[in-house]
Length: 322
Image (cartoon, rainbow, N blue to C red; front, side, top):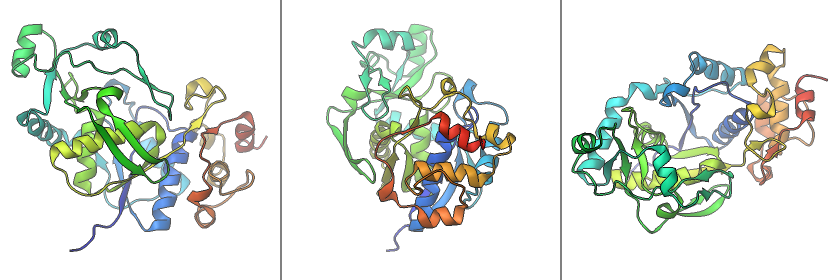
């Protein structure tokens, strides 16, 4: 029996411009893949409805290519795969693993006694209390009884989902306690992130996932979904520390303009940005320009800082040559 080649993916979401934190995560994914002989695919995760920005998909592709990152094959676009996600939902519903839900966000938040804090990302998750579990016979019944659009949730169990993360170590999540039954199809008729990613990874042969450690809980959710859908095959996860602002929160607009495109338009060379990202990743002792082949030689995952990286004014000044 032939072993499946390790395969990973770069998977931006076109909800806005990529920032330096995104660039670091994608770069680390690429460096790991090149050093370990993984195949690299590219997927555009464009299912986030109103948040998707026109032109942001092409911009993300151009910016990652500007950094020197490459991949194999055609780009997979999630919005082209709606029928495949619908088929997965039908399978879950047929097995009574998914059920219709008409709860609003406010109702879910009101029913939860308190949000659950994620120790890695600092994000708070509202635990769904199972209000619609067993409430409706099917989607039509739910819509008729409530006169509301219908979403679909997947049942979770009161036991731990465990996995070994390549960077973060052993992980264990009880989904009933951390998130409750989660949405796999939104009321707008679109597949939710968790279902789409799970199906896409399996269909594309992706078996190595590298991303930020704010998505550790998502790994447990996706493992649960794989089991329900009967998707066999071992997955390898690497969840890496994020880039944060001085306030300890994920890098965002509130920390100033850290968009890649802003620095490109300011005349910053890719070697300069790679130098900062390499410094943040433990490959360089100080901020200094570096080309991608040299960074690939210097990078060592064992030297990657265990704590989040804090973006400072000195980082911005280095990029702009001040």
